Length: 404
Ligand code: NDP
Ligand code: MG
Image 1 (cartoon, rainbow, N blue to C red):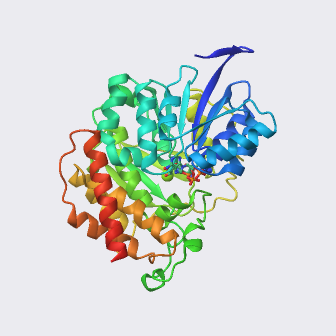
Image 2 (cartoon, rainbow, N blue to C red):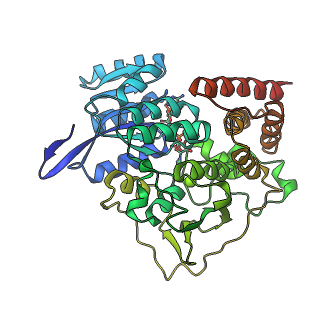
């Protein structure tokens, strides 16, 4: 329920993944609009010190720290300064809190499969859901979108590409919860742009010696480690391909990926008459987040304007799926359907975690995903329980491949 403040309804936000990169950018936008938005509940997994500083700055009513030991530490720190923020703990607290009647907007900035359950809870509670966590749609796109439509939940994409596409749609087509038929409306193609990541020009031979630090040094975006590695393998674009198909309810044949190293054009929509609409801006997540928060209005972000005198080149080329096989694996998984995207996502999460821990080489990521996909042929997904079973089985198998 919103509270009226100085003519604006104050929107209470549940910021999931507050201590991450999406969390930071969301808090930057909230800081600019204290009369419109309040971080009512914030969540993290285990980063106590950062959560403590955030609680002092934003004074949320609740902070959910999923890890119980970290929750205890945070609680003690907050008590020592007589903070009024109450600390909750555990996965169930995460799912319960998004449905609280006080919450208006849920920002889903958790990384990985852990975002699915709270995401679905927010959808079922009919909150405005700002979706950064692409893994939820990759794992359970059909089931997730069916719930969005059943509950008529406002779902707004934060992923910069999907937010760009969303911005390029006419208002009556932006309401993805009402199942607009974009092809009937004249859409012929969605062009997803990709920066190409830090290894766009790296030879296949050099790719075998990539370190986690190199993989996480993205040329255009500051992001969490998992998505940074996904960007380096181009799996991120593959996950976004799947995300686009489910979110906009379009077939894989209507989505194309183009490399655009400058990250100025965030994606494009081509229409039946040959017109192409694009959204351009500085690469800064505050823009999609502000759009999601205020939609259909626009609010300030303090992101610098594009300086057209500096932009002398906007390049586009096709991705190299030989050097970056993960992109094609994801596109194929979407075309196969059923459980294939779940297997792909689970195997990727396990492989990336092992790469970041220094246990496998960069080029092994794609190899163990291929092995897992080969061992787990696609089956239809009847319900969410089936999704979790396949997810767990795939993770166990990938870990086994890595350790053998
Ligand atoms: P980060 O790694 O920076 O942050 C992840 C957040 O999730 C942290 O707050 C972390 O808590 C929390 N978290 C991690 N694991 C769990 C868990 N098991 N249960 C509950 N919370 C957990 O990631 P990003 O912010 O970069 O990305 C978040 C999501 O947004 C990803 O799905 C990513 O693909 C997507 N995205 C991100 C973009 C970006 O610019 N960063 C752009 C587009 C999409 P703690 O810090 O305590 O570990
Ligand atoms: Mg993106």
